[in-house]
Amino acid sequence: MKSLSVFALLHLAANALLLGVGYYWLGVGESRAATLAWSIAVASFLLLLFCWTYSAGFAYFREPGNSALIAWRTSLRNLIPFAVAAVAAGALLLAVMSGADLFAGYGFRLASYLSLKFHIGAKPSSIAAVPRRIALVIEWVVLPVLILPMLSAISESGWRGFRSASAGWRRWIYWIQTPVLLLIVVYLPIRLMHWVPAVQGFGMQLFSFAARALAAYLLFGIGWLLLAFVTSGGSPRATQPMTTVSP
Image 1 (cartoon, rainbow, N blue to C red):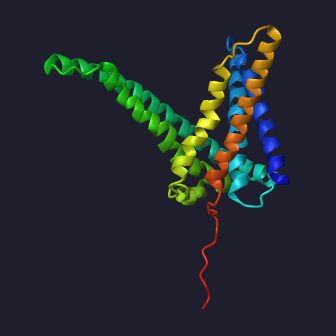
Image 2 (tube, rainbow, N blue to C red):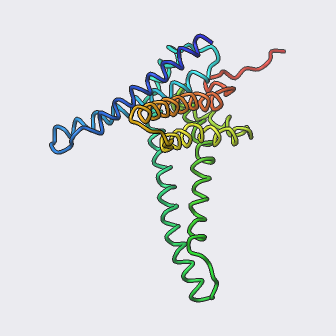
């Protein structure tokens, strides 16, 4: 329990550092070659720090009894494979989102064609919503369930981790846990920050913002640790030796 508390505190502190570096990067100018190069360097550092922070969570929970220090060392050793896999996963997610928007545009054309040629009163918005709903399921359920166990395995064993990545896919409960925890990690913090209670006075408004920001920050950080736990918990080590029972 003590090790988990230490790791959770380190994880929350690393998230705070990520926010600080990200905020600094947004203010870096790109008008000159030197500032553009510096912006690229900061962005690269931010990406690597992000991957190290979240791969450490996977590495910590994959092996029972891991200390926080061992988890961070293990994830640092496999940082490059994890970063490559994370970037590829992000590109795949963007491709699904772009494809949904593309097919939604064709949906409007299909609705017009059905109305013109066959006199079918199909609502363009209803047809265009179909690919977006399919993409929503892919983005929030299918891709996370398939990709997160891969990232978890890579965080501990590098590219060799692909051999044990499918361990999470076979657990039916994981197909429910993943989207629920993603709602806690992503959706609820965003909704909490956009919710503005009706309070009067600058002091109360400032207090409301600070309280909501802290709650969203804790929801995101603790929710991610829970997601890393259910993703990595109970997974066999990719490097576990194959043994047979001696007669």
